[in-house]
Image (cartoon, rainbow, N blue to C red):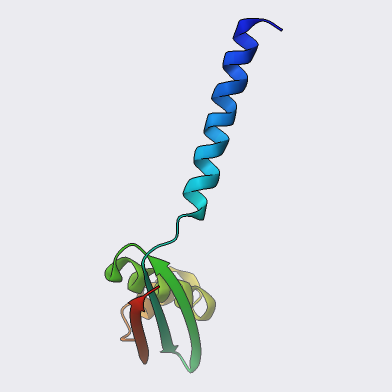
Length: 89
């Protein structure tokens, strides 16, 4: 094999290692949020690096299940959650 093939293989393995290791890294905060919107309810738990990131991601995930369309989704995301618990993961 040529030396360029070895360099390419090493670079590819390095990229794969970075992707795998970064996907195994979970956030330190877990938030569970329940949202009621238009008579429907959804609860979701999300891990994040900060409480605000995890909180917003949990609301977005819950609203994705119960809202349809852009207008409903934005309205749902602005609805105060009926349950919100956050803590270390």
